[in-house]
Every structure is written in structure tokens, then in C-alpha cells.
Image (tube, helix red, strand yellow):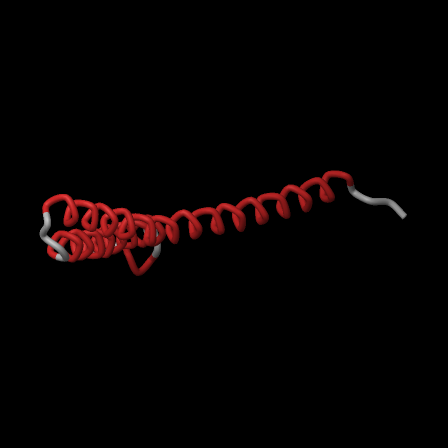
Length: 98
């Protein structure tokens, strides 16, 4: 039985590229998940600390938490819009008519 070493190497490279892409996707998802949780928690803890220091409980805790959640929502929205713009670039439905 004769095998083609070139096609075997090409298949192996394709599998490696697919695995690399999959792991990159997992890494991006994990980074986004940590960011979506960590930022509001940091703002919440900062607000609680400031409230204790300034004796304004729970005003700053609530304000900073709302700012963090709204900020993360706005950031996620614009990041999504940018990713979709890059993904759809050059697609037939994204082209403008002359």
C-alpha cells in the first residue's frame, strides 16, 4: 500500500489548525467570562469599601455596580458589532450597490 506523504502532512496540518482555532475560541470565551464577572465584582467591592470609609452605605456600592454593569454591556455591544463587521466584510449581503 502506497501512501502520499504530502497529503498526510496536509491533513495533519489541517487538523492542527482546526484544534488551534478551537482552543483559541475557548480561550477567548473564558477571558470574556472572567472579564464580565471580575469587573462588576471589583466595582462592587470598591463601592462597599468607599461606603464604609465615607459612611454612605449603600449609595456608592449601588452606583459603582450599576456603572460597571452598564459599562460592560456597552463594551460587549460594541465589541460584538466590531466582530460582526469584520466577519461579514466582503460577504455578498454586506456589499453596497453602485
